[in-house]
Image (cartoon, rainbow, N blue to C red):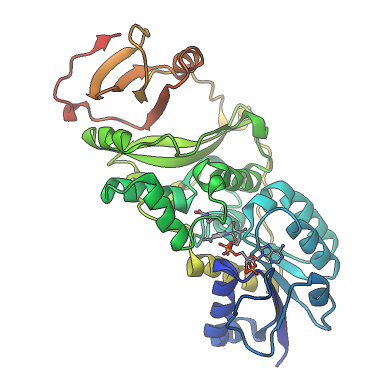
Amino acid sequence: MSIIKVAILGFGTVGEGVYRTIQSHAAEFTAVLGKKVEVAAILIKNKHKNRDVGEEVLLTTDFDEILGLPQLDVVIEAIVDKEPTFTFLKKAIARGCHIITANKEMFAHHGKELLDLSKKNNVSVGYEATVAGGIPVIQTLRQLLKINRVSLIQGILNGTSNFILSEMREKKQSFAESLCQAQENGYAEADPTNDIEGFDAFYKAMILSRIVFGEEPEWRDVERQGITSITSELIAAAEKLELRFKHVASISREDGYIIASVKPVLVGNENPFYHVEGVENAVNVHSDIVGRITLQGPGAGMFPTASAMIEDLVYVCQSRPAERNAVKITAECIGSSKTVEQKEYWLVQGLAESSGVTLVEEVSEGILLIEAAKKDLDVLAAQQPGICYFSILGEIDLSVLNKAAVTVI
Ligand SMILES: NC(=O)C1=CN([C@@H]2O[C@H](COP(=O)(O)OP(=O)(O)OC[C@H]3O[C@@H](n4cnc5c(N)ncnc54)[C@H](OP(=O)(O)O)[C@@H]3O)[C@@H](O)[C@H]2O)C=CC1
Ligand SMILES: N[C@@H](CC=O)C(=O)O
């Protein structure tokens, strides 16, 4: 029986999960591919750590040693940072290997170049693990929604942030304790700044935008906010209104432009994101034929992420099926979606009196439920630094409030 030889770059949470899964699911690989899958080499950085891997595996800190192997079919990358990763993967493609990556930061920056290079070299690129951990959202968009015109994608895309927000609410833990737990569980990045400041979800949103719309918004135009401003007091105030904080990425095409934001919002019980808890992620795809689809599952962790990479291994080893080719849809195709900016409800902290917005309720000391247009709040925030404001997605049930009186402050 012929053999598929694989190299794994990185042996941390994800790399080890991939290695263990290739061992534990050998029979399934053989049944599906008609070939045996063998891990020929593993790249690591620190040669002094103990690694529980078979003697037949080349364990090395030198990528060129891996490239020099007599047979190498697939390179699976689970290391960190844009470099040296990008360089490694370009070399792997040039050598004729299929590549699979979990590294969203690198892929958001260099994915297009890698995909173009892979076409020239007639190899495939798997990047399912770059977005939403174990949820097969990329293959769903690439393979199963080729004709549907997607108008909006919204997602909880960072497992660490969702885990922190859930732990703070359910267990009344502090932000720092919850982050520590996320790190221990292998959800957070080695440097968790990207998780909690919204960069990780931003990179994932840009990868989705390219798949669905064939292009990305100008990165500098994307509103990006993490979860570091969400305090236990804000979470308690939201609970009084029967709302939950969720960190949501939103990407849509409006009048030919891609609009995206990545920020914490509030959702009520009727919103599918309300029930997405812990390390779970969820992605809502709104499209013209099917309507709305919600995909939900574990967004980080050893085996959920390995699952995405292992399924990519099958995908790249099989003949390449036609992929979604994002068509640039004009405003005429979808009907003009020009909207007049409407007033929305917001939970606001740090707003001074006489601000000219409509107060609905003082939920707790210094935390207000107000009704306002976003542009008016943006102006106030520029004048009064220190204001935090969070929009409420969908309807809010005002009957949960003790009084319905509305005051203008
Ligand atoms: N953790 C998760 O749930 C998910 C992670 N990802 C992505 O997967 C990738 C890996 O994440 P994770 O496994 O959590 O990270 P870890 O920090 O657990 O592991 C990183 C691994 O990469 C190795 N490494 C780092 N730099 C180099 C280098 N220059 N050369 C060779 N090896 C190197 C490290 O080597 P050594 O062991 O010697 O220190 C380590 O084995 C990241 O890009 C991350 O964003 C994607 C989805 C989910
Ligand atoms: N740190 C990331 C890992 C998966 O992409 C997250 O928490 O979502």
